[in-house]
Image (tube, rainbow, N blue to C red; front, top):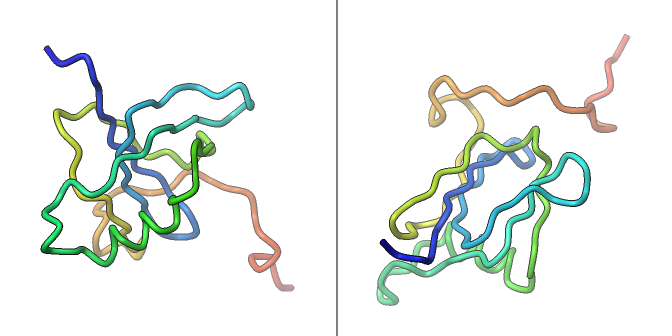
Amino acid sequence: MSSSRIYRISFVNQDKIFEVFAKQVYESDLYGFITVEELVFGTQSELVIDPAEERLKTEFASVNRTFIPMHSIIRIDEVEKPGISKVHSLDGSRVGNVSPFARPLSSGDKKKD
């Protein structure tokens, strides 16, 4: 059995579902957050470049550790090997019956009377 573990983390961020791979995932010292460290990218051939994965790679390029709110986590899976990181739309057509947990209203979501 391999001693290095890889985790696939799916979470909601700004009405999109992010799917990233990391070597370390644990409960944070910050209450209500999950810590994700050592993100893994680039498992595909260097000849074929996926624009979505490249965008994620660029977004997390200088990140050593990221803190994700627990209520944003959809699931965490331990996998054999890393795959391609993705971003899905939360429009319902690609996510099936997954519905996000309730989240606080942002300033743009205020109720209009």
